Image (cartoon, rainbow, N blue to C red):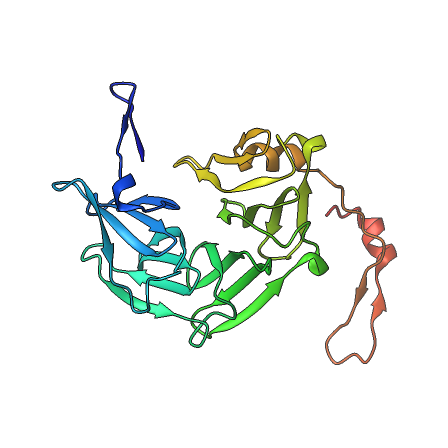
Length: 265
């Protein structure tokens, strides 16, 4: 594991090769400062004093439990794995809940998700596309290529301030509208570095800037810049006005009266 120290502009290498552990995803708990890591066999944390990786006992067997993503909100730290979702308390760092294929998730290959309880999740490796989970009602809705996605393999889900989700995939970067469920696909001709992105190469800065790594480098942008460029001022024209007055059985055409009054909309 490599650690970068900005104040000194230097890298520090932490060698854990003796433990034969592969690290998938790193996460530092902002409440405790403890560094956590996802592995192919469960969850571990870094013991600063002993300088070693310590495995954590999960509600299920850690064997072949691929931990691939962490997400923190007011409810705690959500941990996505190949066997479902774990919810950890941010302060005590104890597992509070476990959502398995039997209790919550339609499939058990979740990798990333956004704000709970209504969450949008990217799922691999079964390439199930995007899944919306209403935790309160335990309801699901799935979005795939048949619903407008460019690809069913999604590596991350990031939310912006404009009700959009940004989804790096195996074919293009998608912008998914959470309200209309419409998808806009960005390809190299639209400015991204490459059409195929990588599993763990993604990040959202505190100011909302997004970074996505692909086969030809990194695509970096702020959603507000793209949304601003695509905003169109489309004029509204009034073609007909029909009014249903009280106790009337049919509509009355009032178009000419509105035109004569020169009412603007």
